Image (cartoon, rainbow, N blue to C red; front, top):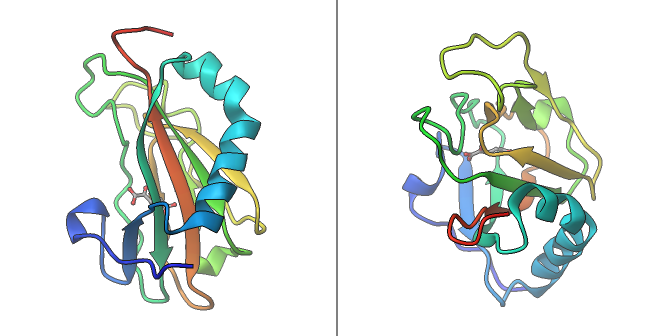
Length: 166
Ligand SMILES: O=C(O)CCC(=O)C(=O)O
């Protein structure tokens, strides 16, 4: 498989010990795995985003021992103004335990006003092959990587098309 080449730091929060790599056709096995994940989740994605949703990012994210937790953030809905719905499908490419800094989410915050204080955070350690689907308005972050193997995920993000509607 082609070597993954890191993108400029602007693509990832807290870039130290993290690499963000846009995926291309050179990365056939990963792209095929993401395609299979999307096929599986297609009914849900279509119900949330409509049939005309567009893919806005296809990438891999690698975090290494030493990576700090990212600031908790939303991918969209930052202003409180109405924005297109966005969903991300994350594919976990190897067994990921708590120490490897899995995705951390604040459940329900995709529906909460921006100023609301979240009630709880949960980390999502996951076995290889797991899929995580989340709303881009959800408050989340990559956790701190305290040691062990690199954590590698691939993900694809889709955005509702405003013109066509759901
Ligand atoms: O590490 C993760 O799973 C999430 C990463 C993330 O939210 C980001 O880089 O914006």
